Amino acid sequence: MRMSLSVPVFDGLAQVGGHPALDFLNTVKYRSGAEPGERLRSFADCLRWARVAGLVSEAEAAAMPDVNGAEAEHCLRQIITLREAARRLFDGADPQAAALVARRIEALRPVVHIDPASGALSRSIPLHRPRDLAARITAVLAGLLEQRPALRIKTCEGHDCDWLFIDRSKAGRRRWCDSRICGNAARVRRYRAAHGGKDGSL
Image (cartoon, rainbow, N blue to C red; front, side, top):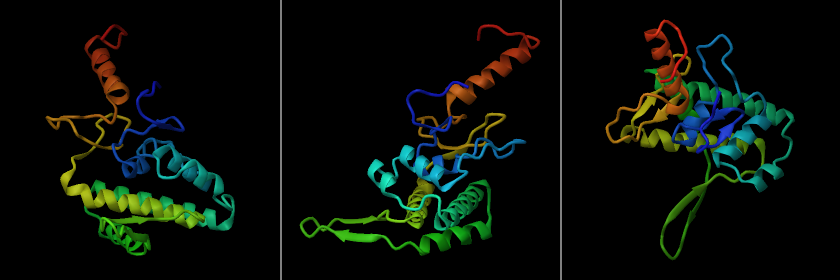
């Protein structure tokens, strides 16, 4: 399948959500499929995805210890649990998912810095251990949820896609996560339906 050339790609999945937290939720190719297409199969996969998403620098990734250890395995399970709970928040009202995500956000302990000259406040999650990556992803998700009321977040209408994306189009009519992938596939299906399943120019 042809990928868009203008966006980062992680293990064959174009990062087209419009926000790192949505790209995180989209690390499953298609949840409703017979083979969902999980891309975060190990903590090392999570770390690689975070590099592609711009959440982790190359130096931070290289310095991460114990990526195959017990703590990393535990953090992988935490990251997947967070992802699936957060996804349910976008699929409809889910009090249990909301409570789980809220607890994860409440547990964050970012480093807070206030610039003495400007008075500007910044918060960061230093990356020293595997659990810090889970915290950093949680912080990015929290940022998206804070912005959610002001964003048009939609589910792709592709027949074999359920990805989330931010519709920033002026008219608010965007239908697909990527028009060159799901949009083009929809056009091909319409053409074949109209022409008895024959191939041809669109």
